[in-house]
Image (cartoon, rainbow, N blue to C red; front, side, top):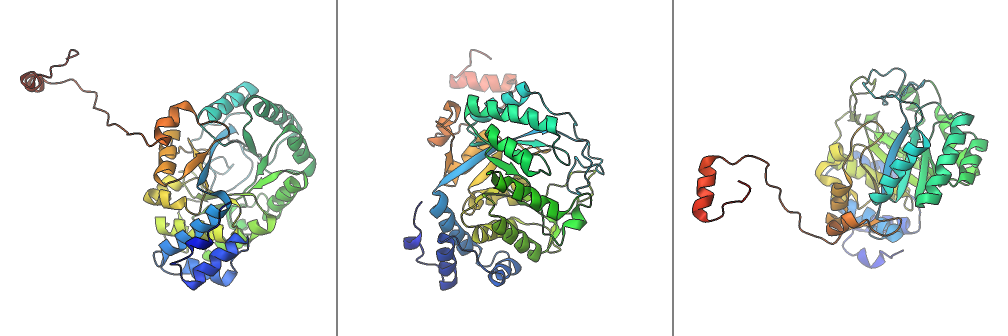
Length: 383
C-alpha cells in the first residue's frame, strides 16, 4: 500500500476530505454521490479523477489486473434478461453450445496464462448449474489450479451454499454474480428471477469462503439514483471485485437503447461513474469491463485512475481488445500489469517501452515505383 496524503496538495477541501475517507475505506454519502453524478459531466472531472486515483493507488499502487473470460456454456438460457443475447427472448444470432469439455477449458486456461492474465474467468449460461455441471467444473477448476496456478472466477447463475462449498474445495477463488442494476429497477430488466435471489447467491458464496465478484451494467435506462443504490448495495455485500460494464446493444435483444439519466452515454459520464464506484467501494478491485472500448474510447487510459482491472480478448458474446493493445494501454497510462508469475516473453518489448514500428502495406509495386527505386539505388531483391 502507498499513502496519498502528501499528494493531496492542490485538491479542494471537499475532495481532500473524500480522499482521506477513501484511504480509511469509508464511503461517501448519498448526497455527495448525487452531487458528483448529477452535474455537468465535464465540470471538475479531472480533479475528481485525480482524487479517485489517489485512493486506487493507496490500495493497489500502479498495478493493473488483467482478466481473461471464457464462455464455457453458451445460449439456450431460460431467463429473460433483456440485455443478454443468451436470453430465451433474444433473437441475437449467437453461437450456442453445451458445456465445454475439460480439455477445451484447460486449453483456454493455457492461453490465459500465456497472455499474462492475472485471473481466468469462466461463465455458464443458464439459471444455475446442475449437480453434474458442478462436478465437471470442480474437476476443471482443480486442474486449472494445479497446472497453471491461475486465480479463478466462475459465473454460473443462481447458486446455493452447498454447491458454493464444493467449488471452494476445488480451489475456486471467486464467484461472479452481477447485481446488474438497482433493486428498484431490476423488474424492468428481468422477470424470471428476482434481485433478492441474486443477493442470496452472493451470500452463499461468502458463507462458503469464496470471494465475490459482482457489478453493474450501465446504460440500460437507469438514473443516477440507480447507480448509487447499486454501488452502495455492493459495498454492503463487501464485493471484493466490481466489474462496471457499459451496455453493448446486440441486435435481437430487448434492451437496445443505451441511456443513462435519459441521455446517451459519453466517455465523461462513464469515467465519472467509475470514479463514483471507487469512492463508494474504495478497497474493491474495480474493473472497467464490457463496453470500455466503445463507451470510454479515448478516456480508457484516464479510467485506469479509478479502475485497477480490465478484460482482454473479449466478453461473453462480443469481441474486445487483444492482449497487446490492452498492455499498451496500461503502459501508456503509466501503470504496470500485475502478472500471476513472470511476464510473458512476447510482451516484454511493450512493457519495456519498445518502439512500435509501422507495417508497410502488402502490395505489388508498379513499374513506375520500381523505376524510382532503381534510380535511388534501393532496388529490392524481392521486386
